[in-house]
Length: 252
Ligand code: UDP
Image 1 (cartoon, rainbow, N blue to C red):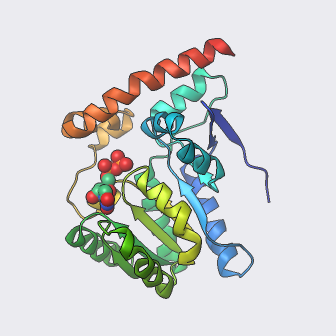
Image 2: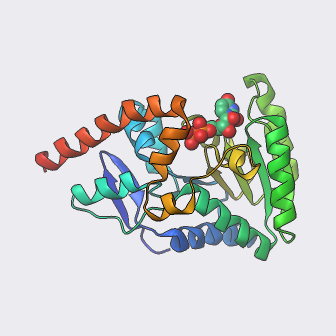
């Protein structure tokens, strides 16, 4: 296997990949697992500045990002930080774009896909739309993300019985990453990916930033204005993340 090209940002490693490269890696994991060669249970994470900031205080999160099989730079803030630190990433890979690309590959390759997360009606609607838009993709199951610890063994068994190639976990960060790190192997899925609020967007319950914002790399700004609850969280974390990057730059 080709050595991974990774960039360190404040103690956390992120892969230097673009969207096509990231999707190709995931396809490689699925192909390998289907061929019976791989170990399966490949973990894909999509760190954004908020998650990188959280990882500075949450050692478990930092460890599992570093241990993940693929960590894509989700957001312009991550790319900018890498530039300041002198090990530039080429481009960001928005988690939602990666998910759409994976659905496209799933459609082509007849992957089995399981959706986990958000509210019962929302995940059902997301599943309906994904299956409708991708006739070649096998939507083998879905489950909401509001389960108790006691429900986990049955849930893991339900996923295992569905034999997914791709397990899409939308439980919010860091819950989804920690859940996958603990249970992915037991589910038997070839690949597990944490995708935050993406199922809400797929189901039409939340809106993505308009194309103009995305082109200008200002998706984060749109979300700040649209989601005040989130804004407080991000505005708390972002300056501290930027500050930590600047301090690190001067320490180098
Ligand atoms: N969620 C869930 N179970 C939980 C907590 C959250 O399924 O116990 C879902 C929630 O409904 C939403 C997603 O996880 O769909 C979190 O979205 P958000 O955009 O807040 O995640 P982020 O990308 O910021 O981590």
